[in-house]
Image (tube, rainbow, N blue to C red; front, side):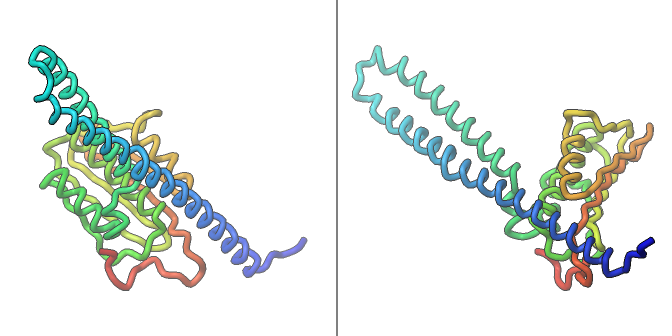
Amino acid sequence: MRIRKKKDYAAELAEVTASRREIVAAFEIERRRIERDLHDGAQQFLVASGMAIGEAQLLLGALPEDVREDLAQVLDRALHANERALSALRQTVNGIHPKVLSDLGLEYAVRDLADRFSTNVRVVVPHPLPALPEGVAAAAYFCVTEALTNAAKYAPEATVNVLIAADQDLHISVVDTGPGGAVVKEGHGLAGLTERLQAFGGKLSCHSPAGGPTTISARIPLLLFQGESGIGVEGNR
């Protein structure tokens, strides 16, 4: 029987790591393309149509009074619908990959998110985080987002603690002091996150006994090669 050497396993591990990095990179390239198409395409058309409606409203004064009132109401409805569509599109673009995440990194983005949710949310990052692949950072960010959304919906008075740490993996833990009873249901946010994390070789778990607390934990491999560190030298702000 042939005994495999340690270097054989190391080579295979490096190959798997490189393959996963390629998957993450491909995911990010496609995400950026979609984000760019929405921003430069649909969003610009909506902005232009809103301006055209505004220009039409300025011309109402030249019309007969009996026509002006009806047309003004139609234009008001059109402008309101346009504004709602533009707002929804911007939320969609932000949901694909928040700009603050790209600009300032995961820690700052999560702290900003926590500030917008509640004063009862505490974020702890005990060590500086390493540079993260954007796909990994986005998966972690949306994991925290979904956990905070659930806490705000089902336990609005609860205290929530968010812990982010890294070694060979990125670890996310969100604990709320609510009544518990949370479950991962197919078709809901946490189930979708589970699938997203699996694409990176990650895992999500939910422990929520009756009476609480609810703990949502995620582990995402950092796709490190041998010798690379999971601890950053400086913060990622």
